Amino acid sequence: MSGRELSRRFYQEHVRPRIEPQLGDVPHAAAMIGDGSDVLGFDDDVSPDHDFGPRVQIVLPPDVDARPVLAALGTLPGRYAGLPVSFTSASSFDGWAAGAPAVTSAGALFGARLGFDPAEGITLADWLTTPTQLLATVTAGPVFRDPAHLLTDRRAAVRWYPDDLWRYVLAAGWLRVDQEGPFVGRTGGGGDDLGSAILTARLVRDHVKLAFLVERRWAPYSKWLGRAFSELRIAAELSPFLSAALSATGWREREHQLCDAAAVLIEATNQLGLAPTVDPAPGRFFTRGIQVPPADRLVTALAATVTDPPIRRLIDGLGGRSDQTPRLPGAIDQAVDSVDVLTNPRLRRASGPVLGLPVSHDHEAGTP
Image (cartoon, rainbow, N blue to C red; front, side, top):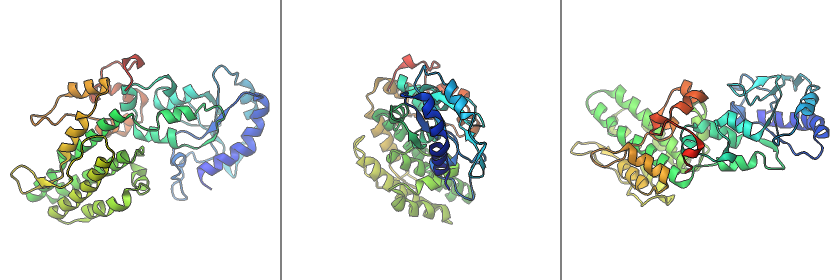
Protein backbone atom coordinates (compact mmCIF):
# COMPACT_ATOMS: atom_id res chain seq x y z
CA MET A 1 0.00 0.00 0.00
CA SER A 2 1.35 3.44 -0.89
CA GLY A 3 1.99 5.96 1.84
CA ARG A 4 -0.77 8.16 0.46
CA GLU A 5 -3.36 5.38 0.59
CA LEU A 6 -2.15 4.23 3.99
CA SER A 7 -2.57 7.71 5.45
CA ARG A 8 -5.94 8.25 3.76
CA ARG A 9 -7.35 5.04 5.24
CA PHE A 10 -5.94 5.82 8.67
CA TYR A 11 -7.55 9.24 8.62
CA GLN A 12 -10.94 7.90 7.49
CA GLU A 13 -10.98 4.92 9.86
CA HIS A 14 -9.43 6.36 13.01
CA VAL A 15 -8.75 10.10 12.96
CA ARG A 16 -11.93 11.59 11.50
CA PRO A 17 -14.37 9.61 13.68
CA ARG A 18 -12.52 10.81 16.79
CA ILE A 19 -12.18 14.52 16.02
CA GLU A 20 -15.45 15.41 14.29
CA PRO A 21 -17.57 15.05 17.46
CA GLN A 22 -15.18 17.45 19.19
CA LEU A 23 -15.42 20.07 16.42
CA GLY A 24 -19.14 20.13 15.74
CA ASP A 25 -19.77 22.60 12.90
CA VAL A 26 -16.16 23.81 12.82
CA PRO A 27 -14.62 22.72 9.48
CA HIS A 28 -11.24 21.04 9.48
CA ALA A 29 -8.81 20.00 6.79
CA ALA A 30 -6.73 16.84 6.76
CA ALA A 31 -3.67 16.38 4.60
CA MET A 32 -0.31 14.73 4.13
CA ILE A 33 2.07 17.59 3.33
CA GLY A 34 5.75 17.47 4.16
CA ASP A 35 9.00 15.70 3.41
CA GLY A 36 9.20 12.27 1.89
CA SER A 37 8.82 10.47 -1.39
CA ASP A 38 5.46 9.13 -0.23
CA VAL A 39 4.07 12.69 -0.28
CA LEU A 40 4.87 12.85 -4.01
CA GLY A 41 3.65 9.30 -4.61
CA PHE A 42 7.15 7.97 -5.39
CA ASP A 43 7.50 5.52 -2.50
CA ASP A 44 7.79 1.83 -3.34
CA ASP A 45 8.87 -1.47 -1.79
CA VAL A 46 12.53 -0.63 -2.45
CA SER A 47 12.45 2.94 -1.21
CA PRO A 48 9.92 3.69 1.52
CA ASP A 49 10.92 6.65 3.68
CA HIS A 50 12.60 6.14 7.02
CA ASP A 51 9.49 7.53 8.73
CA PHE A 52 7.10 5.58 6.51
CA GLY A 53 3.75 5.08 8.14
CA PRO A 54 0.29 6.63 8.47
CA ARG A 55 0.78 10.41 8.63
CA VAL A 56 -1.92 13.06 8.86
CA GLN A 57 -2.02 16.79 9.57
CA ILE A 58 -5.17 18.26 11.03
CA VAL A 59 -5.68 21.89 10.02
CA LEU A 60 -8.14 24.08 11.93
CA PRO A 61 -9.35 27.63 11.31
CA PRO A 62 -7.47 30.29 13.30
CA ASP A 63 -8.48 30.85 16.93
CA VAL A 64 -10.14 27.44 17.30
CA ASP A 65 -9.31 25.70 20.58
CA ALA A 66 -7.31 22.61 19.59
CA ARG A 67 -7.25 20.97 23.02
CA PRO A 68 -10.34 18.78 22.53
CA VAL A 69 -8.94 17.55 19.22
CA LEU A 70 -5.57 16.79 20.77
CA ALA A 71 -7.28 14.91 23.57
CA ALA A 72 -9.22 12.83 21.04
CA LEU A 73 -6.06 12.05 19.10
CA GLY A 74 -4.50 10.84 22.31
CA THR A 75 -6.79 7.78 22.11
CA LEU A 76 -5.43 6.67 18.72
CA PRO A 77 -3.69 3.31 18.44
CA GLY A 78 0.09 3.47 18.36
CA ARG A 79 0.27 1.30 15.26
CA TYR A 80 -1.80 0.88 12.13
CA ALA A 81 -1.39 -1.80 9.45
CA GLY A 82 1.65 -3.00 11.38
CA LEU A 83 3.38 0.39 11.19
CA PRO A 84 4.01 3.06 13.86
CA VAL A 85 1.71 6.06 13.68
CA SER A 86 3.43 9.34 12.70
CA PHE A 87 1.80 12.74 12.67
CA THR A 88 3.49 15.38 10.57
CA SER A 89 4.70 18.22 12.75
CA ALA A 90 4.43 21.75 11.41
CA SER A 91 7.23 23.02 13.62
CA SER A 92 9.99 20.41 13.61
CA PHE A 93 12.96 21.13 11.35
CA ASP A 94 12.58 18.04 9.18
CA GLY A 95 8.81 18.32 8.99
CA TRP A 96 7.68 15.30 11.01
CA ALA A 97 7.73 13.83 14.50
CA ALA A 98 6.64 10.31 15.41
CA GLY A 99 3.80 10.25 17.91
CA ALA A 100 3.44 14.05 18.00
CA PRO A 101 -0.01 14.94 16.64
CA ALA A 102 0.09 17.97 14.36
CA VAL A 103 -2.99 20.09 14.90
CA THR A 104 -2.25 23.43 13.37
CA SER A 105 -3.56 26.31 11.29
CA ALA A 106 -3.05 26.57 7.55
CA GLY A 107 -0.92 29.69 7.97
CA ALA A 108 1.36 27.96 10.48
CA LEU A 109 1.64 24.86 8.31
CA PHE A 110 2.64 26.77 5.18
CA GLY A 111 4.85 29.07 7.20
CA ALA A 112 6.74 26.09 8.57
CA ARG A 113 7.09 24.41 5.18
CA LEU A 114 7.79 27.40 2.93
CA GLY A 115 8.79 30.20 5.27
CA PHE A 116 5.72 32.28 4.35
CA ASP A 117 1.93 32.10 4.30
CA PRO A 118 0.63 32.46 0.72
CA ALA A 119 -2.61 33.97 2.04
CA GLU A 120 -0.62 37.01 3.21
CA GLY A 121 0.89 37.65 -0.22
CA ILE A 122 4.00 36.25 -1.87
CA THR A 123 7.02 38.47 -2.36
CA LEU A 124 9.70 38.11 -5.00
CA ALA A 125 12.07 36.92 -2.28
CA ASP A 126 9.54 34.30 -1.18
CA TRP A 127 9.39 32.84 -4.67
CA LEU A 128 13.10 32.93 -5.43
CA THR A 129 14.36 31.54 -2.11
CA THR A 130 11.95 28.59 -2.03
CA PRO A 131 13.27 25.37 -3.64
CA THR A 132 10.99 23.70 -6.17
CA GLN A 133 11.10 20.50 -4.08
CA LEU A 134 9.19 22.28 -1.30
CA LEU A 135 6.73 23.82 -3.72
CA ALA A 136 6.19 20.35 -5.17
CA THR A 137 5.41 18.80 -1.80
CA VAL A 138 2.96 21.48 -0.65
CA THR A 139 1.06 21.40 -3.95
CA ALA A 140 1.17 17.64 -4.64
CA GLY A 141 0.76 16.19 -1.15
CA PRO A 142 -2.68 14.60 -0.83
CA VAL A 143 -5.49 16.52 0.86
CA PHE A 144 -8.05 14.17 2.36
CA ARG A 145 -10.58 16.82 3.39
CA ASP A 146 -10.84 20.60 3.05
CA PRO A 147 -14.45 21.85 2.93
CA ALA A 148 -13.53 25.44 3.90
CA HIS A 149 -10.57 25.66 1.48
CA LEU A 150 -8.13 26.18 4.34
CA LEU A 151 -5.43 24.51 2.24
CA THR A 152 -6.87 24.61 -1.26
CA ASP A 153 -6.64 28.38 -1.78
CA ARG A 154 -3.08 28.52 -0.47
CA ARG A 155 -2.02 25.64 -2.68
CA ALA A 156 -3.57 27.40 -5.68
CA ALA A 157 -1.53 30.53 -4.90
CA VAL A 158 1.75 28.60 -5.18
CA ARG A 159 0.71 26.26 -7.99
CA TRP A 160 3.03 28.10 -10.38
CA TYR A 161 5.05 31.27 -10.87
CA PRO A 162 3.42 34.50 -12.07
CA ASP A 163 4.15 34.92 -15.79
CA ASP A 164 6.96 37.48 -15.50
CA LEU A 165 8.69 35.41 -12.84
CA TRP A 166 8.25 32.38 -15.08
CA ARG A 167 10.03 34.32 -17.84
CA TYR A 168 12.84 35.17 -15.43
CA VAL A 169 13.53 31.61 -14.24
CA LEU A 170 13.21 30.26 -17.79
CA ALA A 171 15.78 32.83 -18.93
CA ALA A 172 18.06 31.84 -16.06
CA GLY A 173 17.73 28.17 -17.03
CA TRP A 174 18.64 28.89 -20.66
CA LEU A 175 21.55 31.03 -19.49
CA ARG A 176 23.08 27.96 -17.83
CA VAL A 177 22.88 26.13 -21.17
CA ASP A 178 24.42 29.12 -22.95
CA GLN A 179 27.29 29.37 -20.47
CA GLU A 180 28.41 25.73 -20.51
CA GLY A 181 27.19 24.46 -23.88
CA PRO A 182 30.40 25.34 -25.78
CA PHE A 183 32.60 23.60 -23.21
CA VAL A 184 31.49 20.11 -24.30
CA GLY A 185 33.39 20.66 -27.54
CA ARG A 186 36.15 22.80 -26.05
CA THR A 187 37.16 20.10 -23.55
CA GLY A 188 36.60 17.18 -25.91
CA GLY A 189 38.49 18.85 -28.74
CA GLY A 190 41.41 19.42 -26.39
CA GLY A 191 41.62 15.75 -25.46
CA ASP A 192 39.78 16.00 -22.13
CA ASP A 193 37.09 13.41 -22.75
CA LEU A 194 36.24 13.04 -19.06
CA GLY A 195 35.71 16.78 -18.76
CA SER A 196 33.49 16.70 -21.85
CA ALA A 197 31.41 13.87 -20.36
CA ILE A 198 31.06 15.69 -17.02
CA LEU A 199 29.85 18.82 -18.75
CA THR A 200 27.41 16.77 -20.82
CA ALA A 201 25.89 15.30 -17.67
CA ARG A 202 25.51 18.76 -16.16
CA LEU A 203 23.80 20.02 -19.31
CA VAL A 204 21.48 17.03 -19.41
CA ARG A 205 20.30 17.94 -15.91
CA ASP A 206 19.81 21.56 -17.01
CA HIS A 207 17.71 20.36 -19.95
CA VAL A 208 15.61 18.19 -17.65
CA LYS A 209 14.97 21.11 -15.32
CA LEU A 210 14.02 23.29 -18.29
CA ALA A 211 11.48 20.63 -19.25
CA PHE A 212 9.81 21.05 -15.84
CA LEU A 213 9.72 24.82 -16.31
CA VAL A 214 8.18 24.47 -19.77
CA GLU A 215 5.44 22.18 -18.44
CA ARG A 216 4.71 24.26 -15.33
CA ARG A 217 5.70 21.49 -12.96
CA TRP A 218 7.77 21.84 -9.80
CA ALA A 219 10.90 19.70 -10.09
CA PRO A 220 11.62 17.40 -7.14
CA TYR A 221 15.11 16.99 -5.70
CA SER A 222 17.74 14.85 -7.41
CA LYS A 223 16.61 11.46 -6.07
CA TRP A 224 13.30 11.71 -7.94
CA LEU A 225 14.22 14.08 -10.76
CA GLY A 226 14.48 11.39 -13.44
CA ARG A 227 11.36 9.58 -12.24
CA ALA A 228 9.27 12.74 -12.29
CA PHE A 229 10.77 13.81 -15.64
CA SER A 230 9.61 10.55 -17.23
CA GLU A 231 6.01 11.59 -16.43
CA LEU A 232 6.25 14.88 -18.36
CA ARG A 233 4.59 15.11 -21.78
CA ILE A 234 7.81 16.26 -23.41
CA ALA A 235 9.86 13.38 -22.01
CA ALA A 236 9.00 10.93 -24.80
CA GLU A 237 10.53 13.25 -27.41
CA LEU A 238 13.36 14.59 -25.30
CA SER A 239 14.62 11.49 -23.47
CA PRO A 240 16.23 9.73 -26.48
CA PHE A 241 18.48 12.73 -27.16
CA LEU A 242 19.48 13.11 -23.52
CA SER A 243 20.18 9.39 -23.11
CA ALA A 244 22.23 9.36 -26.33
CA ALA A 245 24.25 12.36 -25.14
CA LEU A 246 25.08 10.59 -21.88
CA SER A 247 26.09 7.33 -23.58
CA ALA A 248 28.09 8.93 -26.43
CA THR A 249 31.78 8.10 -26.55
CA GLY A 250 32.94 11.22 -28.37
CA TRP A 251 32.36 14.93 -28.02
CA ARG A 252 30.99 15.42 -31.52
CA GLU A 253 28.15 12.99 -30.82
CA ARG A 254 27.51 14.57 -27.42
CA GLU A 255 27.33 17.99 -29.04
CA HIS A 256 24.95 16.74 -31.74
CA GLN A 257 22.56 15.10 -29.27
CA LEU A 258 22.55 18.10 -26.93
CA CYS A 259 21.75 20.44 -29.82
CA ASP A 260 18.85 18.19 -30.84
CA ALA A 261 17.59 18.13 -27.24
CA ALA A 262 17.84 21.91 -27.01
CA ALA A 263 15.87 22.27 -30.25
CA VAL A 264 12.97 20.32 -28.72
CA LEU A 265 12.98 22.55 -25.67
CA ILE A 266 13.34 25.75 -27.69
CA GLU A 267 10.28 24.81 -29.75
CA ALA A 268 8.39 24.08 -26.53
CA THR A 269 9.52 27.40 -25.04
CA ASN A 270 8.41 29.23 -28.19
CA GLN A 271 4.96 27.66 -27.91
CA LEU A 272 4.46 29.16 -24.45
CA GLY A 273 4.04 32.58 -26.02
CA LEU A 274 6.08 34.27 -23.30
CA ALA A 275 8.54 35.95 -25.69
CA PRO A 276 9.24 36.35 -29.42
CA THR A 277 10.05 33.03 -31.05
CA VAL A 278 13.65 31.93 -31.56
CA ASP A 279 14.91 29.73 -34.41
CA PRO A 280 15.98 26.46 -32.73
CA ALA A 281 18.71 25.67 -35.29
CA PRO A 282 22.20 25.47 -33.75
CA GLY A 283 25.00 27.71 -34.93
CA ARG A 284 28.76 28.02 -34.84
CA PHE A 285 30.38 29.20 -31.62
CA PHE A 286 32.22 32.33 -32.81
CA THR A 287 34.97 31.15 -35.22
CA ARG A 288 35.47 27.74 -33.63
CA GLY A 289 34.32 24.42 -35.01
CA ILE A 290 31.79 24.00 -32.23
CA GLN A 291 27.99 23.92 -32.62
CA VAL A 292 25.77 25.40 -29.92
CA PRO A 293 22.02 26.03 -29.59
CA PRO A 294 20.79 29.66 -29.66
CA ALA A 295 20.27 29.69 -25.89
CA ASP A 296 21.61 33.23 -25.60
CA ARG A 297 18.86 34.57 -27.85
CA LEU A 298 16.21 32.92 -25.67
CA VAL A 299 17.75 34.49 -22.57
CA THR A 300 17.64 37.93 -24.12
CA ALA A 301 14.12 37.51 -25.55
CA LEU A 302 12.62 36.27 -22.29
CA ALA A 303 14.33 38.85 -20.09
CA ALA A 304 13.38 41.72 -22.42
CA THR A 305 9.65 40.95 -22.13
CA VAL A 306 9.58 41.26 -18.32
CA THR A 307 7.63 44.35 -17.23
CA ASP A 308 6.78 43.59 -13.58
CA PRO A 309 8.57 46.38 -11.65
CA PRO A 310 10.34 44.32 -8.92
CA ILE A 311 11.56 41.70 -11.40
CA ARG A 312 12.54 44.37 -13.93
CA ARG A 313 14.59 46.14 -11.26
CA LEU A 314 16.23 42.83 -10.34
CA ILE A 315 17.23 42.09 -13.95
CA ASP A 316 18.48 45.62 -14.60
CA GLY A 317 20.42 45.67 -11.35
CA LEU A 318 22.19 42.41 -12.16
CA GLY A 319 23.66 43.88 -15.35
CA GLY A 320 24.87 41.93 -18.35
CA ARG A 321 27.82 40.83 -20.44
CA SER A 322 29.44 42.91 -23.12
CA ASP A 323 27.16 41.22 -25.69
CA GLN A 324 24.13 42.41 -23.66
CA THR A 325 23.14 38.93 -22.46
CA PRO A 326 21.72 39.48 -18.95
CA ARG A 327 23.35 38.03 -15.85
CA LEU A 328 20.61 36.00 -14.14
CA PRO A 329 21.31 33.76 -11.12
CA GLY A 330 17.64 32.73 -11.14
CA ALA A 331 15.86 30.94 -8.30
CA ILE A 332 17.71 29.39 -5.41
CA ASP A 333 18.02 25.88 -6.81
CA GLN A 334 19.31 27.29 -10.10
CA ALA A 335 22.08 29.15 -8.27
CA VAL A 336 22.78 26.92 -5.25
CA ASP A 337 23.46 23.19 -5.27
CA SER A 338 24.10 22.57 -1.58
CA VAL A 339 21.65 20.26 0.20
CA ASP A 340 22.55 21.92 3.49
CA VAL A 341 21.41 25.29 2.15
CA LEU A 342 18.33 24.10 0.29
CA THR A 343 17.01 22.16 3.30
CA ASN A 344 17.74 24.85 5.91
CA PRO A 345 15.04 27.52 6.18
CA ARG A 346 17.36 30.08 7.77
CA LEU A 347 20.07 29.70 5.13
CA ARG A 348 17.52 29.73 2.31
CA ARG A 349 16.06 33.02 3.49
CA ALA A 350 19.54 34.47 3.96
CA SER A 351 20.53 33.63 0.38
CA GLY A 352 18.62 36.54 -1.15
CA PRO A 353 21.71 38.71 -1.82
CA VAL A 354 23.31 35.78 -3.68
CA LEU A 355 20.34 35.94 -6.04
CA GLY A 356 20.64 39.72 -6.41
CA LEU A 357 17.79 40.49 -4.00
CA PRO A 358 17.86 43.19 -1.32
CA VAL A 359 18.89 42.07 2.15
CA SER A 360 15.38 42.65 3.54
CA HIS A 361 12.80 39.92 2.92
CA ASP A 362 9.88 41.84 4.33
CA HIS A 363 6.60 41.23 2.55
CA GLU A 364 6.34 44.98 2.00
CA ALA A 365 9.29 44.67 -0.40
CA GLY A 366 6.88 43.97 -3.27
CA THR A 367 4.91 41.16 -4.82
CA PRO A 368 5.48 40.15 -8.45
